[in-house]
Image (cartoon, rainbow, N blue to C red; front, top):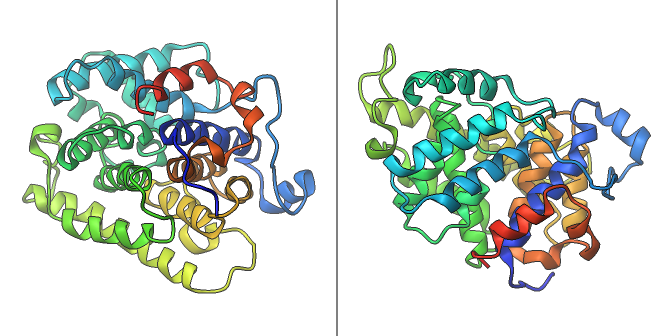
Length: 333
């Protein structure tokens, strides 16, 4: 077992970027194509100088900078900062990494000054909701604030209740791993958290987002999200209890294009390969689904558990946005 090292915030943010970079070239390939290109163990080395990431890391940095700049972590303060960072990302010439259409459409509406509850893509629960939430999990805040921040940053673009719930679960996973929980304990901890939060709607953070046709109250709205998360966590638990043939983990917990599946499939990789973080990232990148997001979340979890000791030392100078990752993680370490 890797020693639980300090610098867990750095380990988590850099781990997200490392997984993103390893999964970037495999995202739209089949497993057979990935194996032909990289061998049966998948991609295990960063390539390029620097090794390029995708919109997953770019948007995680946007969230992190918004939180960094916030003089207070309240809805009124954080929402305009998130909005500005998301719009800056949308307009950036570096936003050329196959960004998700949900984020682009929501940002187009946000740029017109619309209320975010109206600008959001209400039917989308894509993994763009939680691929960027890791910085929230690294904050030293109470659980209500963590939940509100995680769901707000998701809700600006992805208004589906499952996107909100999966984002909170992802941030909570980073939080408890950084606090000392083991990867083996994590699935049960997430099930317990989801059950406790199942009827909790954060009015202060979400406002009237819940008001949809056929929805009679806020609890009914958010329960749908938590129930979908609980269903995929049950699939994860069954998969982890059985043998592992080393194949595509998407067969067990989904391809990761939607938020709850990205969380569960990343957890599968992280838990199965808790003693070998680079193998966990390679496993996430060797999937027939959203490989960069799956590997990125696996990296965030492993880095939160083990710190920078999880990763090859020379990777920290070779990854894109290394200076920003260092600057944002340092106050939390």
